[in-house]
Structure formats: C-alpha cells, structure tokens
Length: 255
Length: 212
Image (cartoon, rainbow over all chains, first blue to last red; front, top):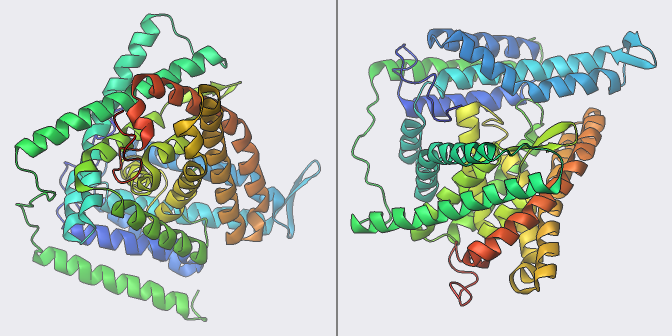
C-alpha cells in the first residue's frame, strides 16, 4: 500500500480543474451541513449533489468502492448494535432480540450521511494532490506551523512506510511470526522504537540542511492560485445550493 | 477508535472542534519554528506505527500509542495528532473533516493529561518505576480515549448508549497491549536515545536535562 498514491489526483475532469481553495471551503461547509442535517429532503438533495460531483470527477470505480468499504467499517458495527437496542416499534424478531423501526432508521440515517460526505470528499478533496491542498491551506490563512507540519509529515510518511516495510522484511527473514506473546510485543516495540529514533535523527539532518539553505521559518510560496471564471461560477452555484440546504433545514413544512 | 461522519450531534462536534483548536494553539505556542521538522517527522513515525497491527488473541489491534506521543511531545501532541489524523482523512478518508476536531481531542487530551501526571516518574524514576509509569501512561491514555469516545456518543444521543458500552469493552484488551508496548518502547528509547524521553523535542520544557 502506497500512502501518497494520489489515486484520484493527477487525472483530468472539470472537478480536477477547479481551484483547490474553492474545493476545500466547499467540501468543508458541505460536510458540516450534511453531518448536522436531519431532513430527508435536504439529505436526498445533498447525496444527489455529492454523487453528481463524484461522477463529474470520473474517478476509478474500483478505488471508490475500496474507499467506501474501508470507511463503512464503523457503520457496519453500528448496524450490528443499533437496530436491536434502540427502543421503539418492533420490526422483526430474532430469538430474544427485536429489531425496531427507529433503530433501523437511525442506522440508515447515519449510513446515508456518512457516505454522502465521503462522496463529496472524494470528489472535491481527493482529486487534488495532498501537497497542493497543503499549499492551498497556507493561502487560506491556516497557521504556518500547521501547514509546515502537514508538508513534512506528508513527505515523510511515505518514506517511513518503506522503512517499516524493510524492517519487517528483515524480521520475516529471521523467522519472526506474530503471536500473542511478549516476544512478539517486544519485537514490535523495538520496531517502533527504531522508527522513532531514526525519525528524530533524520529530522536533525533535515533541519541542518534547511539551515544551510537559509531557512528562516517561512516557506516562501512562489506559485499563487488564480481564480478563473469557472471557479467563480462553481463557487456561486455551490453557495446557492448550500443556502438552499440551510433554508430547507429551517423551513418546517419542507420535507 | 475513529468516530465516522454523520454520527455525532452539533454540540459535540462544535465543542470538540473548539477544544481542539485551543489545544493546538497551546501546542503551537510551545513549539519553536526550529522544532517543526522534528515534530513533523515524529508525527509521521507515529502515523506509520498506528498502521501496525499486533495480534491480540484471535483478533488484531492496530497500535494507537497516544500515551507515548503525549509523553514524547507534551502539549505539542495536539498539533501532531491533528496533522496525523488530518493526513489519515486525506489519504484513506478515515475519520473525516467534521469529526477531525472531536477525534483529535479524544486522542490528544488523554495523552497530554497522562504525560503531565506521570512525567516525573518516567523522567527521574528508577528503572522499575520508570517501566511501571510508562505502562500506566500507555494504558491510561487509551482507556481515557475510549471513555471520551463513549462520552461523545452518549452526548450525541441516548440511543448510542449500547454502542458506547461496546466501545468501552473493546478498549479493555487494547489498554493492556498499549501499556505493554508503551513500556517496552520507552525501555528501548531509554537505552538507545534517552534524550527523546526528556521532552527536549518540543523545546521549552525539560531544559537542563536535555542531552546529558
């Protein structure tokens, strides 16, 4: 598994061409609105919009399904518990357990919201390279240190992943097989310890190299994003859509 | 454990986000610019460590190590955990944007609390006290994280009470594993790189001891 594989970025589609700052803001506001909504009508519309965006981004279907499977782990767990424990009208019976209408409804609501947000996330944020997004964060006035942490962390996650893979290959070559015993735990502990030690040593060298190049605590940003007309049109439409959602949320007689 | 999107109620989400922002601000204040690469690389290392699965009986548990993070980074664990979780959301869509604040708080607050409580024993104690304190730091942090997750669920709705109970039970074996591993890792670091345990990483705290 390659963490910074950028499966969804590096393609071309109308969604890919949008300005990353617009996408970050749009995705964040949309996610919060969906997470806090409980109106069926508004949720249907948001899901339609999210899926529409995802389709417009033309992502690889296989990868999308993989992400959906990973994210829904917690949801599966909720489905195992909620229908049987929420009090309400009985829907089905299995031995001493009763599934209730209310329980199923709650589980379904959460599943719907979670996957709507996931679709929007994949469409808007996963279509950018993480480093472009960090850069955009800097332009959105996120504290500089946080942005730098993201840059370094994102850069070295991949490298450390390969390092762990090498260390684990070395362990396997020596006949290590994980079990539930102290030997296994100690081996993993030393693996993690080694990783930490190496990361600190490496950070020393990085810091020295940066000092040599005159680092004063700020990353100069050379490339500025430019808002084009298509970005403006998208931002305007999406803002209208989000306002519509809020209105639906606040109007009692709408679904 | 990550709470996924669409589960928590507005007050919990907003409170989590607000508290996390405060924690991050406290962490950033204690982090000098020159420590940025070190903190970032440690965050990356912990991120990768959390992808390692260890066998617990018939099942697997992935490492959390927030106790150790709190111990090594102090208040800086807040920005470090935030960045780690943010990256996880970005790369695997695990967790998410709306829950980022709550999830960061649930992991970082216990870490900072335990490290503040236990650091005198980890820093100065005899080898045996040191290992016991490290064990406690790892186990307690994860236990508190589990309690925080359960509390968030219950505050979001009475209906989540059974789910919260399951979450708490699941955290029991993880507590043991985390405690043992944290103690072992601390033991390893004490021999190989003791300055890492002096909290010299974040600057400010632990000066004087560093590098001796």
